[in-house]
Structures are given as C-alpha cells and as structure tokens.
Length: 83
Image (tube, rainbow, N blue to C red; front, side, top):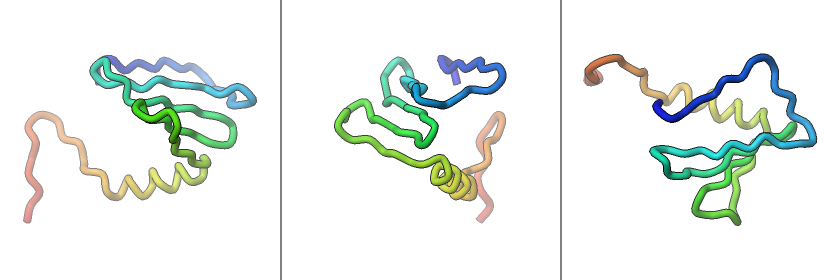
C-alpha cells in the first residue's frame, strides 16, 4: 500500500478528543474516519452531511462477518478458485 503510513507505539487513549484520519487513495480523498471512545464514524468525501456511525462492538461484528467473505491474498500471480 504505497502512500499509507502508520507508526503508532504503545496505546492510544480515546477520550473527549476524537482522532481524525483523512483517508486517501492515489492522492484522492476517499473520506474521513473519526474515532472516539464510544463510536467510529465514516464521513464520505462527497457528502459531508451524511455519515455512518458504528459502535466499537458493532464494528467488531461487521469485521468478523467480513472476514468469512474475504478472499485469501496471494503473492505473485493470482490463482483461480477450483470449481
């Protein structure tokens, strides 16, 4: 993932001040991720009026469900699934 960096040492305290991350791909803003003690919010780049809010518990449920639908990553050439 070129252009993506995170170097976080230790724990991050989420409290009254939110952590905000501007998410970009190839220089184009995709949206903004806002983390607080109670929720995680996604603000799409094209719509500042609409956001998606999840509790941390709900985010874990969504990600665990997505894990079963995820395709395994391969190195080198992509392989086809057997039929």
